[in-house]
Image (cartoon, rainbow, N blue to C red; front, side, top):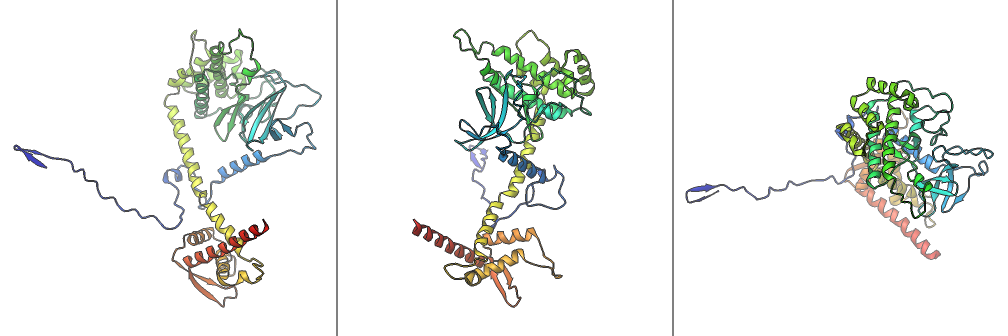
Length: 458
């Protein structure tokens, strides 16, 4: 404070507070699951050092589909290469060679393959239309909204052979029960976001129907075959402006979105038929909120004015934040599973190095190399890791013991450990820091010998 002319002035102390010292562990650890993640999902019967089984199975399935190949002898109609793409794998059943089967959406004979680009070795989805080939990102395990939510007897995993909204035979039966409204809103948010991105760029989607909407995972949506109509209907004449009809196409996108939402709300394709529209809206009114009903009516009703996909945002309202929270929570769960795996590569490298040392039959013409000196300590440490037994002589298997010991070895902690020979006649007491020194020196000895041999061979 300071007094001037009888007035006392008080000043805020701007001296920074002392920084509290932070002490980090000098070893690798596995922290527990974050509380907000631990309590949002059911706990397993036993704690795991690895990712959740559901996520692991989903990733494995995607990897299997990505690496899937065909037997060329069984499917000679599939080409081995197309331009710079190879390893083609059909994503839909191939039509019989004696029958011409056109796509009801595009009006041309089409086929769809997974293929690998030889330029970047990445998988892509190829859509072939006569002499044209469209390349899209490949999403392993994806299925169409048609095949997941509507019983279509002629549908395969990716495309249906029946035109959207038209039925040659009896209508497909409705699923038992209706879809949860939260799921429908999750789809609306994603599809409207896709349309908003496309329309903002001054373009139109033109393929907003269940046969072209891919679902990956539980609720992740992607729109397939975008741009195909723009290529097929392109007029190269000077008097034609391809952007002149974009406003009309964008309005058609909104109507198509309304049909998709109505079909989902009815859980049946019959709901979008003109003769069933009144009953379908009654079903929506009884079972769902007024916001969903108003959104469908807005999209399907002619407003006599140019509409925008942004107009439905007030109807989505706070549900947008619900979907945002769900996406962030899903991201937290995946990050938590990733955190469990982040140290596994380091542990694998330790085991790989240890495996190159233990039980090596000969090194530099010395058959006893792995049984003497520092290598003998590492052999006993290997037995300490994997070959312990209980008092009854049964194998003692404890994953946490293995991981804990490997982490201590990698950090070189001063903790002491007792290593017992297999005949139980010798007991060696060493520290993990001693073991780490032996481990690194021995492995470097192997690396030096390997590099020397490579230089001599060159």
